[in-house]
Image (cartoon, rainbow, N blue to C red):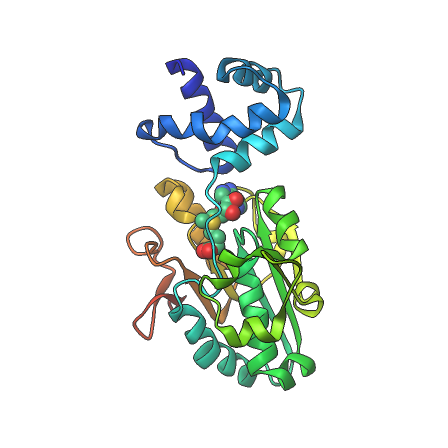
Length: 272
Ligand SMILES: C[S@@+](CC[C@H](N)C(=O)[O-])C[C@H]1O[C@@H](n2cnc3c(N)ncnc32)[C@H](O)[C@@H]1O
């Protein structure tokens, strides 16, 4: 790929998603965009870039963004944050919201849905009474329309179901569709509201949340965008709420609105 096409794609992805693809990621464009070109019978990257420049196909842009962003996720990813959620955050919030009986949870950058579904399974299995008594909203958003389609279908491969998922949850909430695929139960699917949302845009319209998971996405942004997102998250997180970031992400040195919660990596509260 010539340098000007590479720069064009690099800037396009940064401007549309905030994701920084360094110069060393040059090779990624070739491999990741191959299926996009095959789907539309576009002969070369140069032609793909020309089509994107003409701006006449919204679908091509959506496919390009999807291909160039990383969607890696799995159920109960990293374990400890979900243990914290189950043993600390949720029990505390059920006490603190005993009067209003309303809790709002947001998974920003939810990818294929494993993260919000993990939370819904925790609620259903460990807090069945509260899950019924309380108005608990789980909003899950992502920039990619493709991952949202997969998330809403709730269909996962053997590999995806085996990764991180306790057999207890698999037995209770998944059924086999065929020898290679599983579907999560309708109740769990319908407990999550999936919407398309770009973290580069304002968050005010989403309202406020008691729990926010914004995991393994800030890592792809530059520092000014990390700061912009974290500053906005601080405004929409309840005073006694929890923010969960990915294991390789931290607000320290970028946004001083958050502090560690009980020394658990990846769990933060607002600084008083
Ligand atoms: C690596 S996945 C993380 C999934 C999940 N949060 C987890 O930790 O397992 C990153 C997700 O961020 C999404 N993403 C990238 N840029 C985004 C943006 N500007 N706004 C919203 N989502 C974005 C991608 O589409 C992708 O699904």
